[in-house]
Image (cartoon, rainbow, N blue to C red; front, side, top):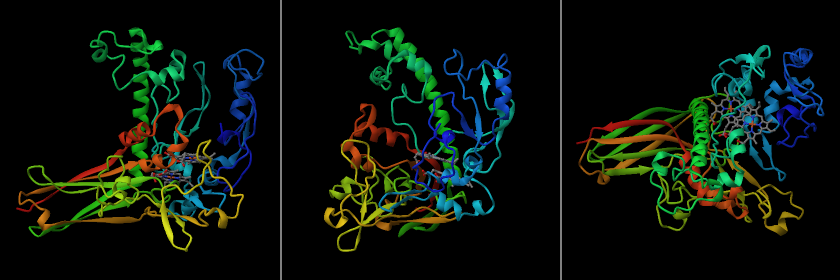
Length: 456
Ligand code: HEC
Ligand code: HEC
């Protein structure tokens, strides 16, 4: 509704747009115009719809106003290029795209993100835009509105994705009490419920728990579909290239892993690159399975062993000197003109979700950083990067051959971001720990490869 209630070309506006207000039956804006809707509205005996809000029936918008800008890259650029109030260039997906080979060829964001295959120009589906009570409207170019990217849901599957049946069955608060992980509504759990087990009021009846589980199974299917869409776009963006062994003998092992940008539409990651995590997880073991090298593993919080790990800071675990990560770094200027890394440098009010406030006071007095920037670590269009690894001879066990398991993993944000903003709290009553665990659990392995080093 946000995209289809806009009537002006805002150009780059950092998402600050005025929507055309109105109820369900008011006009919407789209690329194709009104012709097909007019035909439908002339045939209301066939298409059972009404456009008068007071009339009973299936209500739809009464007009489609043509808004061709919606098919242009600059439309996406109204939001996907973000300059904060203090001038900080937070996101630059659109700016990166404008300089890209894909843009030079005339390919659009829509071509890559709304077509048949997520992340590549692949043509569009054709079909009816609507099926009204079983009657389809005329076939047309169809665009995929899923917008797959690195993000995934970390909330209860009973409340997301939206499911009409789930909403009828229980309230939001009741769904949050339904213990999915314990196995409620499965034979395995229900056949073994301990005597006198206490359930919340809404879930006392075993029949209800089975019904709820059935709805959840539909939800899991949908979430799995979404996961596949994400995997598709991400694998088209991040490619594990060559793995080259430079040296492998008793004096040590040296090898390199190539990571390539698979798209020439923009950097990877793009946009919210200061928080996007894409990294190499590397484990080298000897023939008995003893680990002789590790990089890209997590601390007990779920963070990588980088400069933002609380455990690394506390000196409890070591910094990962070989970590290959494409996460960009927010840096702010400190008082003496130098720069320092920040997890999230934006000031936010304690009463609401994080948002940037324009400073009413001179920064000289508040001590707020006068400059902030995103030190980009992403890979440019068609670019590539090598991750070098070295295992010293004395780390080897003499029990070769050695085997390296190499994974390229994507996670939308690090756990330390949740830590940085936890004081404002999270929706749906989830704790920072639960959010962090869900974040880690959803991390996706994009590519996995194995190499063997034949050292005796
Ligand atoms: C040539 C194909 C192509 C074009 C053109 C393209 N993209 Fe992408 N886009 C991709 C691929 C592949 C990915 C997955 C890699 C990634 O997440 O960075 C992606 C990822 C993204 C992401 C998720 C990035 C993240 O990490 O959060 C956003 C947002 C995005 N694109 C927006 C845009 C916008 C806006 C435009 C136009 C200004 C655009 N894209 C143009 C292929 C394309
Ligand atoms: C009204 C603002 C707005 C417009 C217009 C808009 N987006 Fe987005 N888009 C967002 C927000 C907000 C997110 C979620 C946060 C993020 O990833 O930056 C998002 C997420 C995405 C993602 C998924 C990244 C993820 O979070 O997993 C893709 C891909 C994407 N948009 C592509 C597009 C394309 C292509 C267009 C133009 C057809 C477009 N967007 C237009 C606001 C917008």
